Length: 82
Image 1 (cartoon, rainbow, N blue to C red):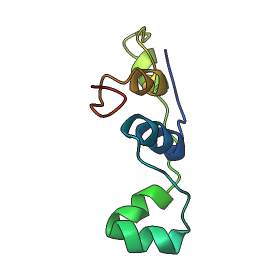
Image 2 (cartoon, one colour):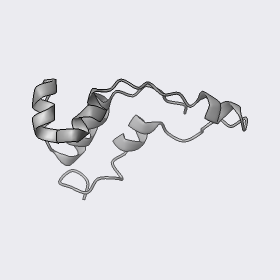
Image 3 (cartoon, rainbow, N blue to C red):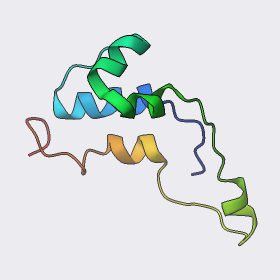
């Protein structure tokens, strides 16, 4: 499946749910205080596309997208995924 534009928030909430860790929205100032220099990456909106990756070699992905793959839970070992 070709999946594009997955928000970081969606990924964070999914990971938090699988690890039984709460997630919360924070202001840019709070993010800088918590994540330091890394917060600049989360504050930047850089939409990406896999169109060229699919077009040039005439390839179409057949596996799950990012959200579906993460939601399967096989990347997590915790209370809900021993």
